[in-house]
Every structure is written in C-alpha cells, then in structure tokens.
Length: 301
Ligand SMILES: [Zn+2]
Ligand SMILES: [Zn+2]
Image 1 (cartoon, rainbow, N blue to C red):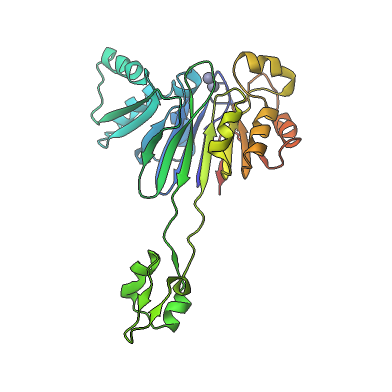
Image 2 (image 1 turned 135 degrees about the vertical axis):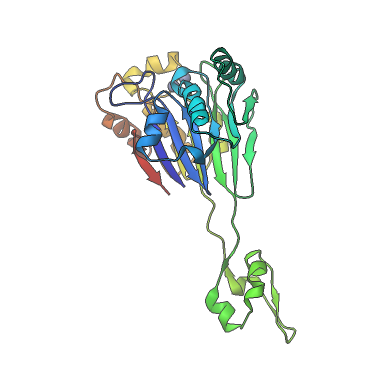
C-alpha cells in the first residue's frame, strides 16, 4: 500500500498547508479519501493521474473535507472522462453536488454514482476480489465515517525449487497457487504445502478523521498496519478538542495503543500551531510508533 498525503491540516487552506485529502494506492486502485480545496493542485504536484481515480470516499460534509469535490468533478468532465465515478459519503452529498451542476448547466458526460451513507454501524461499501472497504462510524459534530481498507488474502506462492524437484508441469501451477495438491503420473499425491509457501499477509489501513476520542472503534481497527487518526489539538487545547468533537495527539495515541496498530499517522492539525513536531512528542509519550503526516509526504508499507 502506498499513501499520498495531499493535505492534512484542519479548517482553511493556507499558503503552505492544505485541507484534508489523501490517495491510497492499493491493488491497482487509486482511492481518493476526502477532497478538500486544493486537491486538484496537489494531485498534479504528486503526478497522480486523474483518470486512475474511480472511487472517492468522503468522511463528512464539513468544507475542509469536500469543498474540492465539485471542482474535481467538473475537471473530470473537461478532461473528457467517460468512465463511471463512484462517490461514497453522507446523505446530502448527492443533493449538494447535483445542485451545483444544475445551476451551472454543467452535467457530467460520465456516470456519477453516489453511494449515500446513513448507518451508524460499520457498512461494507466496496468489495472486489482483492480489497474491501468498510465504514468506521465516528463521533463528530455532523454524521461522519472513517474508512477501513483491507487487502484480501492472496493466492499461495509457488515454491519453484520444489516443483522442479518433483518434476511438476507448469499446467498445475494455477491449482497449486489455489492450494490444491498434485497427483503425479505414478499416482502418488504431493501435498500442497510441499509445493508452495503461505501467501503474504494482507495489508490494512484505517482512516479516522474527524472524530472525538472514541474507544468504540478499537475493536474494528484492532491490529491494522497503519492508522491515520486525526489530532487537531495538543493537550494544552484539550478543552477546545472536547468542545469541537476533535481529538488530541495523546487521545489518538491512546486509540493506537489499545488497538495495537503497527504505525500511527497523525494529521488534521489545527493551523494555530507553528510547528507540528509537538504532536509527535505528545503522542510518543503514549505510543511508540508515530509518524507525522504532512502535505506532499508519501508513506509505503
Ligand atoms: Zn476537518
Ligand atoms: Zn469536521
């Protein structure tokens, strides 16, 4: 998996900081997660092809998470897109976007398919042979979901040395990868585990923004490889954090620790702070493995 941070600051766009947007590369998909203002420019800067984006996941309808969407939808039209585009987000997103398209008489020439969400329980919103995406219901001032991206267990890996040793024809390779035993010409059966290795462990990523401290998500995200958890405030502004239903760096770290995640990625910093280094300092006092998201950074695992 490869995660491109396009923007990871709260509230308003500024000279050097952008509101929330990310692209997750997973099994040949380019999933766009949230779409704050400036997303298009950030996509260009990171040389991500617009045409590779077919699914957009919007956490909630605060402007810093979706005000870039109407512009992006319009650009897709100008670029002559004809593939369908799927948008997953809270109820109301379809009305908001179609109203703008209607007023400008600028309907798309490609299918725009909205998947509106209302459930307060996790919902499987996307699935194919290789990946699944499930909502993570969060606690914010408006209806909000995070998203849990999981790879599925892949096929077994051929043990080429062993298949050569047993003189196994390449015709059987497909079956071996699917876990089947092989019967040789003389009638003996060779067990699959002698001919193949276990598949690589499927990877996972949980995106949680925006949210108040919410321990009920721990079960759902338990053991994920990477967790992006918002940390709008430092401890000194904990009162503001509670009031606005955001989290502090320490609260994000407490979630990461309890969920035994691999790496905690912090973001959605309030622009009141001069430097983001303190976020890492406060979080690592609770959970060791912390990374700071920043616009333009790429993480791979
Ligand atoms: Zn936000
Ligand atoms: Zn918000």
